Image 1 (cartoon, rainbow, N blue to C red):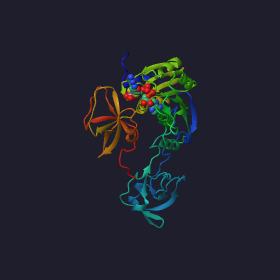
Image 2 (image 1 turned 120 degrees about the horizontal axis):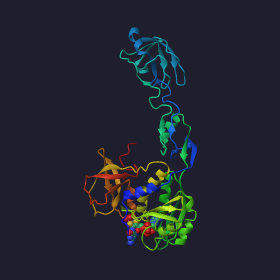
Image 3 (image 1 turned 90 degrees about the vertical axis):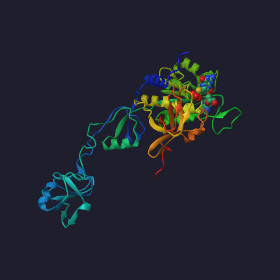
Image 4 (image 1 turned 180 degrees about the vertical axis):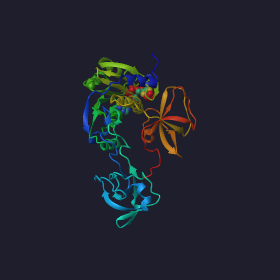
Length: 408
Ligand SMILES: Nc1nc2c(c(=O)[nH]1)N[C@H]1C(S)=C(S)[C@@H](COP(=O)(O)OP(=O)(O)OC[C@H]3O[C@@H](n4cnc5c(N)ncnc54)[C@H](O)[C@@H]3O)O[C@H]1N2
Ligand code: MOO
């Protein structure tokens, strides 16, 4: 049998095979959150659009002050939305935060530092030019590329785009995915549990993770451990962009997933030197659908989703694979025999400003309980015998929950 692929080899092979979304659609910004840009988004205007004041106070020309004894007549006002024109020579103009700077003015004195004396204003002798000014275009320029294709838009990005005068963007039409679980033992939560059966979790977890990535994911139900049942569940599979199954990926005679996919398409890769998740498989169904068989053990299914499916979904939407990795200090030692590249469920937390990682108890890939406390994964290299307390570790953050003390 061919040597098992390493994690890196498998990730490279999968990402190399992923097609890119071709269908696009134009959406207004209120519909663009979580969508992936299909083309670059450019600013339509400079930001700030014009020189303006950062504070409520007085606009003036600093060079006028010494000769006038730091007292100037107040002429006119500039409020937000005004077009104030020119500052009278030797005068100050009342001005408000965000209002246009009158031509000729080069500084602002905030009103707390100014003493109004009737129709004149006295300002500090320390007043200099260029105080409290927001300059046209200092944030970004009209025509500037704000976001590259593949960028997944988050709420703050929509604020940037709106400010830049952009009202709609071209985004990738979302990938469509079909999610199926296999196993004679699987029972929907809520139904009575017959002897030998278990409640099913992987399909739900896969569906919601895909949806969180912006995929239009469809529940394909539970297939039994026989080829006919799986073929039935996969009847329309070739029309999807992704098909993700769980279970039946290993070597037992109930593990029929690879045989059926071999008939409907192709298995390109099976088994990776990763723990949990060794029996993961990747291929295609028909000419369109990328296929992932995730292992049945719930933790293996979650970890292989993170390592293989999530990067593939991002790349499909023209994005980068972007599995973020951080460095953390080991809270305690962990010993093992060299084996596969391993991902331990871990609690990440910050103590004295340093990120720590604690490997949780119950690392068997059927032990889902430790996920309650898991907010990241510790990565151990294949040849490693584990780590000592205090050692520097590679960690994959999963969520920010539990990282530190809540401050509000
Ligand atoms: N002789 C060998 N046996 C196994 C090997 C091996 O190399 N040689 N690999 C082991 C590893 S590693 C894993 S991981 C599992 C995965 O196998 P399968 O993908 O074939 O998964 P199943 O056998 O169908 O199920 C495994 C386990 O997970 C439970 N399960 C399945 N689906 C679900 C679901 N949707 N929700 C919740 N739990 C599920 C199932 O009841 C089993 O307990 O194989 C090892 N065996
Ligand atoms: O690889 Mo399996 O996922 O160790 O349990």
